[in-house]
Length: 287
Image (cartoon, rainbow, N blue to C red; front, side, top):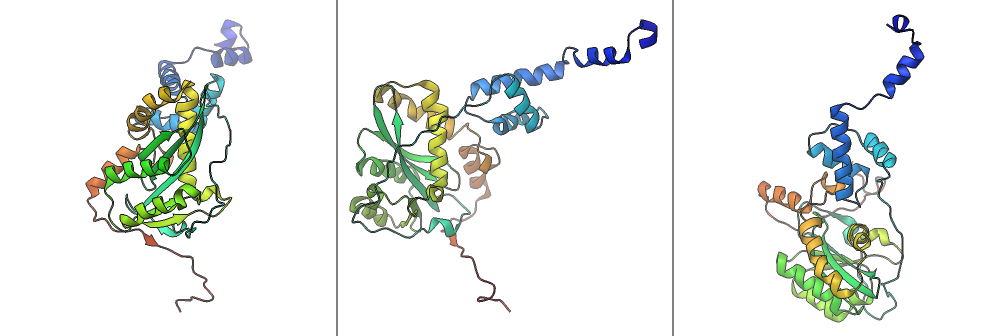
């Protein structure tokens, strides 16, 4: 055919590679662009999971190439402001969370505080997450970094969950979480207290990841000006988007609500998380 048309084979194949994409490729690219624009904080892995839910068969690397070509890769901003004051006279508790084997919700709650920089002011945000489902179960915004801020977030979590005795509450060792008022509230509901060691933010990694998601996908995306403006929208983001829609890689790309619904259908009886400690084979041999 090339000889009859007097076209070299190299020219033919170059033209073939430059041909317009087919209908399937066009539909894929259209769905990918819509998903990326709808979820500006999503990386290529979550975008690929969304496309699979819509019936497309596409690999993560191809999604990444298209996002890069279309300039749709998520951009992250990194900032740090210390909100933890570990220099206090209160008792510091041992880290229990690192040794827990989670099998259900309400076995381990993790809590943290972060700052939020708005266009006109700084505010603070406290949250309590269920570590197993990653669901935000209690939160509070405030202008002051005192014990009342995380305590109100804890009260919201207790009111929504009504946990049984045996729950483990994990946080950093900041003065807010180590204060008598906060500790007594946890002891009153039968919770065990766990705290991270100093300068080890990864020991509360689930909360650190949540705070990063909140800032990247909501705070930075909308450019809030004031406390009242943020307060009017943060509940909507957490309840309607983060808990119900946002996909989590740790949950096999399901939302926290989807994950907890599946647990409810399983119908297993609740029990506290088990402790699992590493064993030294030479000392604690089973033989």
